[in-house]
Image (tube, rainbow, N blue to C red):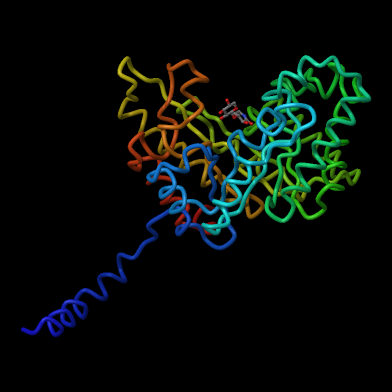
Length: 356
Ligand code: XIL
């Protein structure tokens, strides 16, 4: 049989089968219109082909894991260094991805000159407003949403001690969440088109911290403080984590008129002496990833699901747990998709209706 006839026959027979099996192949293909599926990134490894190929193939949103934080952008008081942040934006543009910005106000990951500078409240207030304004204006039109304030509350829901609050603070110490509010007001002025988020961890389900976050955000909404959304970090380390409580919390936050983003999802597992996780933990991990996706998709106000990195080769959990935990992400160290990846993709493919 002539080759072109043969090929015609094969396609004729195979055609319907191909249609039947053309399920989404990647996370970003699986995501229905409007759902953002993102990950934190390190531009220092964009040059690694497997890293860039996997990133571009799977995700439609990125966030700088570190390179838009004070400690990278503000090497010294007089300088703004946007080089690595700009690389993230360039990568995103080349691959049709959105960029989330992280983060403008936090008591961690600040440069030494700021931590030990013995500034007055007036100086700190000036520094913070200048930082928010300069960074947001630099990325205006490129970063669509910012974590304006990160982790302002402790696990009991009290405002945390921090250089911005009361050590010595920007002039609003002992006034509770007033400094958080001030940061949001400066942020809206700096880039009126960016979505402004409050981001935190440990208050994703139902507990004293999530009640306090809810109360703060409700107060902000009632008084017209400019805020558009809330980020739930979701660094999970218990394999029996209760994702049903996350769904309930998402519902009450969304009912305030806020967008909810899952911002830093990872599920860390104990590692053995060879650095391996147990098989059964990897399966339970997949269930947690599924549960989180379901909790988000149940509510139309939850518009983004983002993981804190995507390959176990580059995850903050290793150093954070001093090597005792890891294997927290969707791909293994060789970029092979794990059960967690299949779980997340299946659940995303089901879309919002099936999640209800
Ligand atoms: C972590 C980064 O992953 C690390 O590379 C860095 O050394 C420390 O910060 N909550 C946050 C993130 O909001 O910014 C943190 O990221 C993880 C916890």
